Image (cartoon, rainbow, N blue to C red; front, side, top):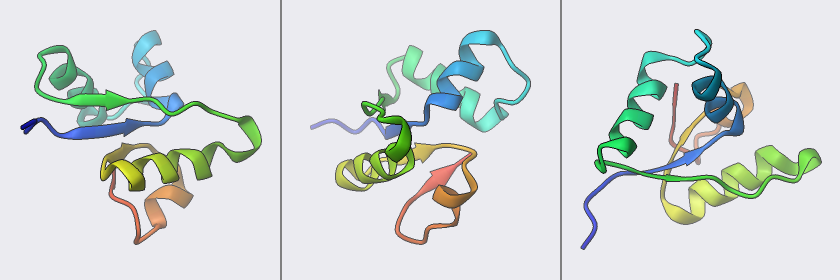
Length: 84
C-alpha cells in the first residue's frame, strides 16, 4: 500500500520551480523536494487552455490529491484541498 501523499500540480507551480522563480512558495517547493526524495507523488493533468482550472480540480478531486496552486478560484473551493 502506498502511503506517500499525492499532489496534483498546477502548471504554474511546475514552471516557477523550473525557472527558480521566487513566485513559488516555500511550501510548494517542499512538495517538489519530497517527490525528488520519493516521499510524495506528483500528478500533472493534461491541460486544455480554456478548461485548465476545471481539469486540475477534477483530477485533484478524483485522485483525492492535494492541489499545489496559487489560483484563487481553486483555493476558494471548499470541495478541494489546496496548498501554496
